[in-house]
Image: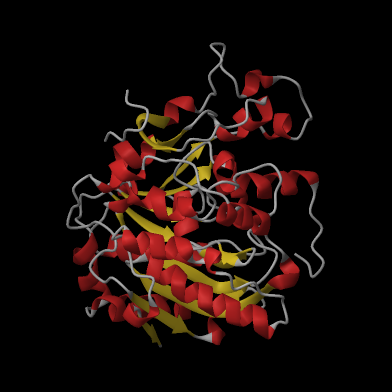
Length: 399
């Protein structure tokens, strides 16, 4: 195998040791500071990756940025959420309004622009920080109701994220979503990760492989010339180390289309929204990528066909926002925002949301660093032909 190749809570929230580990696992590393990662990535020459080979693979009619490059629809209604409680009827109205404005068609007719009735659709959520900020279950309901109302069978819908236990902790269970598939790309032994046991057999197979290793596709990967940590704690969390970050088999072998439901929050002076949710959530062995590449991963991983040709719709959940402390949930910086954002182009979407979040941070008297390093990856993706990042080409419509 060519080693470069690609083949197809409360105001002063108290965080427990377990919660801290869950948070750090969700952002892809054991400890770290996103501001430092971004600064490090901006100063040094990034390591080589296999992005060139991804860009050489022919595109399809569904390839990013989709049918509406540069178009971002924002739907606001402060009444949709009060004291973190969602009004589902009003949310449904906002959902249909946003879809219709994005496509120029009614919500029902919009279905055919993205899907066939035999598609297997994956709904990528962000379950990190339930109770503070995570993808709202009511928004997932809206997506499922829209898909099934247009003839997609419930068994053809899968809600997914990288870690299985985070889905359960966020209330995404078979009881809450009957008939819908729920799948994490990997499992992890939390007790071993928290140092409560030295028994690695709960995550390590007798042959020395991680018990989730078979869930990743060795023929589809993001290669970067930087090694992962050989420490067992790293392997428990990241499945592999070395220079390969493999895509989950769920994406390469099962899903035919993807809907991305990120949340509206910061990552240091950047954002942790559409592109980060899909990029760091679709592959393993990610902690090695933060310091040398950080946001560049959000431009390069979506260039691979497994995402580029399947990610057809992005809806940023701005019912709640978080303007500081991210990507970890921080209740003292979270607020009811009452907004949804719709786009086929995740880079235009993140460009718009980044600007809005910077304005919110300034409003709240947070020290803001507006160095271009925090948005350069969006323009990199524009060079790759994956989306629009220049505001003179973005059509941001607010309803």
